Length: 148
Image (cartoon, rainbow, N blue to C red; front, side, top):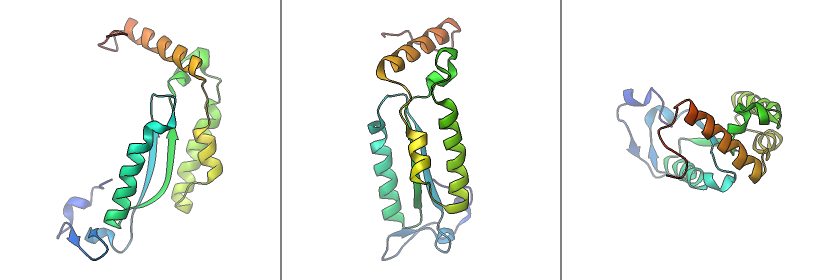
């Protein structure tokens, strides 16, 4: 949320009747775009993060939210057994979202829907997760055992 020019501003922040303002951001408000991937099969996991960004946008008046892209688990995309499950559609939508954010400062509903589309049912999600964890344990990439 804070870019590299933030530390060079003086004064760093000041209060106005609209809220707290950063002087370098007053003339040309920057944009924020939430891109979140969670290892849980339900988009509700992102609600606290979305609410936090809403509060930041309202209180600072210097960050405009131009979109929210939420993706439930993509771990199955790494497994050969599940690779064909709409991976290309999701990745194409991510690329489109980046172009839209740059060119239009917003994400279209069609792109958002393609990115957030359900890919795995819960049984597939559980199976893909367990296969991946088993492989990582064999390769000693994780320090925990399932069930601990």
